[in-house]
Length: 451
Ligand SMILES: Cc1ncc(COP(=O)(O)O)c(C=O)c1O
Image (cartoon, rainbow, N blue to C red; front, side):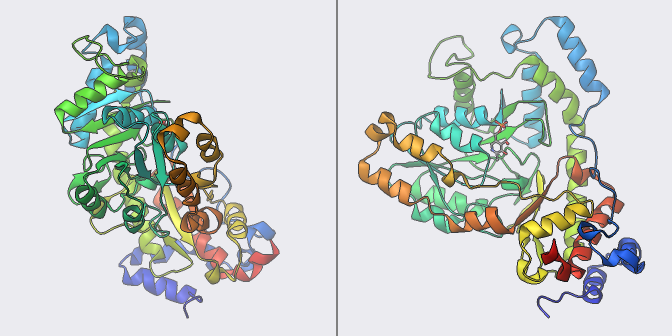
C-alpha cells in the first residue's frame, strides 16, 4: 500500500489526527465527479482559480506610512544624526521581541553576516563551515573577508546542514560554523552547538529566514555566539533591504557595532576594520511600524503550516520538511515539502509542478542549484589571495569536496515549496485548496506523464 495512499486512507488519517471537521469540507472537488477527474493541466477544472494565495506582501500599515512621513520631514535620515533615533529604537525593540540582550541594525542580512565574520576576526587562512543550500549572501559574507566557505552536505529531509558532515570537514583552520535555518525552520542546533564546543568553534546563526522561530526554549538567532536576520522585501519582517545582528555578549556586540560603522566605535574612535553597513532611518521607520504585529503573523503561519502537516500526515508522496526534536515554531519563509516520485507514478517533479500550478497552487522548486556548483568556486581558486592564504593541496581538496549529492538531489528532484511570508497567511479554505490540489494530482497520477 506504500505508494497507493488512497483517498479513504487519506481521510482516515485526517480523522485520526482529530481534524475531523476539516474532512467534511476539505474535498468538495472530488465529490463532483465530472472533469475534476481530469488534471487542469490536461483541460480539467482547476481546484482554485489562478492567483496568489494569502495576503499581499510586504505587509503595509498606517503606522509605517506615518513613520516614513515623520522621518522624511524630520531631516534625520542617518543614524549618525541621532543616537536615539529610529535605528536605535528598532534595535531595542527587535532585541526585546527576539529575547536577546543586544541587536545592531545593518543594511541587509548579508551585511549582518559579514559584520559577524569581521567582528570575530575571521579572515584569510580561516575556514567557515556552512550550507550549500542557501542564499548567496551566506557564502558572500565569508568571501568578503577572504576566508574559505566550506560547504557541507544536507540532511535531505530537513534540508539543513547534516551535523555528521560538519564533523568530517573540521580542520585546524576551521574557525566557525554558520548554520542556516533554511525556510525559517530551525537547524539541528543541539548537535551543532555540541560540535562547536568540542572543537572550540564560534557559531554564527544565519537566521535570515527565521525571525521568531523557537527551538528548545530559545529564539533562533540567540543560541550561537551571534545571530543574523534579513529584512529584505520578501522576508517575514521587511523594509526593502535591511538586517540585524543579535547577541548576548556585550563586548562582542560592541565590536559588531564598530565593524558596521566602518571601524568607528560608539566613542568615535576608529578602532577596527569595517565597511559602512549602517541601517538608515527610513528602513528603521518601516520596521518600527511593522514589528508590533509581526509575531501575530508568525503565529498564523505556524497554525497554517501545522494544519497542512496534519492533513498530509501519513502521505509519503509529499512530506513536509523534517523538523528536529525541540522545534517549537518555525518562520516558514517557504513552506517546503519533499516530493517522492515513486508515489506519483514515477512522474518527475517538473511534471508534478506543472500539474499543481495548473490547479491554482503556486508551488516551485526554490533554489535551483547548490552554491557548490556556482562559478564563484573557480573564481576564488584562481585568486592570488586565496592561493597565498591556503596551500595548493588544501585548495585541491576543497574543490574535490564540492561533491554534495544530497543537495543536488534536493535541488534537481525532490524539493517542492511555496514562498510563505504572504502565502502562509491565507485562510483555512486556501490551505484546504492546497491539500485538495495535492490529493487531486495524486489521485490522477496516471495522467501526469502525459503532461
Ligand atoms: C538564508 C539567507 N541568508 C542570507 C540572506 C541574505 O540576506 P539579504 O538578502 O538581506 O542580504 C538571505 C536572504 O535572502 C537568506 O535567505
